[in-house]
Length: 494
Image 1 (cartoon, rainbow, N blue to C red):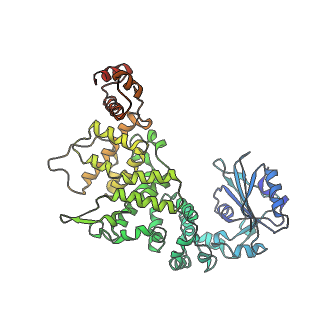
Image 2: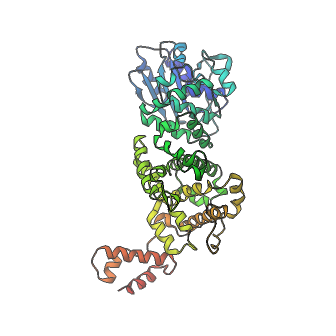
Image 3: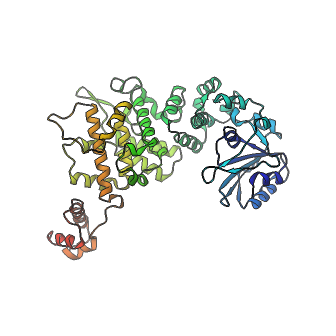
């Protein structure tokens, strides 16, 4: 059943509004459908009747303002939000919206029909510009590729719009109008007082952009980034002599940029990417980890023997990141992932600084990190890649899958491209071994604790775990490969 035709039957003066109309005018597919209709005493009854016709579930998003959401799984997935006109008419409703490109309406008419988009759950609509109600100049701004607020008070009315301006510009590759920039600079501090889960949603959608670092940097220039993350503000003046103007924050944004670059074509840089892909979290969460990974460098900065050091910043950074993510209402699983890899983000580099990475060192690294190994290696890749230019990184690409070259006497020059290449080759080696040894499943054990207790005649306790770890190392090194060999080796431990 056609969604627009069903809506027209159940509501008076119903319009397509918001992102669905904006995207249809840009000839882009869209997923979510926003409708606004004339107010009616029985509005909720009509919503339920529409939901029944569409075979959809429905529930109120805002009971006071009669905002409803309908979700349909079949015959094609769809999410429809519908509400009465704010102010009673279509014109008054549009003038209360956030940005001009969202403040347009298309009245549903006979024959107007959604078509299936290029991917499941997407729709396209051939909207005629001449039929669009546009009281705020949205069509002109759409043609100019510009995000402009409807009025000077939109950010004060709803501060989450401060972030939405950047998210829309990033998603559409639009610019911010001078009025938007002035409003953002004036009202940026208000973002701290809005519902933080809404801030999280806008932020994460912005991080979906393949150029998220560019937009984060722009947010910083206009005062919004550190209003969302006040913990990042001290980075700008920390380690300026080392990182240049912008200090640690310059490095942080460069790491996010490298994460953007990696996810545009990960197979070019990560060996065994096809096998590793299911183990890498969604890109936007990895970009958040990149943004927060050095959050504790300023409080941990100290001069040691004439050199600026940041001892303990990774562990303290994990604690700070946890508080930030709790404030933004991230899930416990997301917090655990990001804080775990931030807390361990120096470990791959420490392994790479050795002459060789022994089997024992790799085994302990994989054992300690478990399922966080591949996410950590991904974060470490972006961190190390940030120390070379984009052109040099591209030039290194063919050599990244090579084995790390032996260290010359005296080691490699500090912070040199040769050192970066060796570190990144070490990351590739760790990833390759992790996948080859099937460590993502913990490495299938040949024996268990019961075998140890029975064979050695010992009581349950710490020694059982110690013996199992020794057996795990023997298995990792390839010295035992069958249960029979493992039991024989176990007997030799009496």
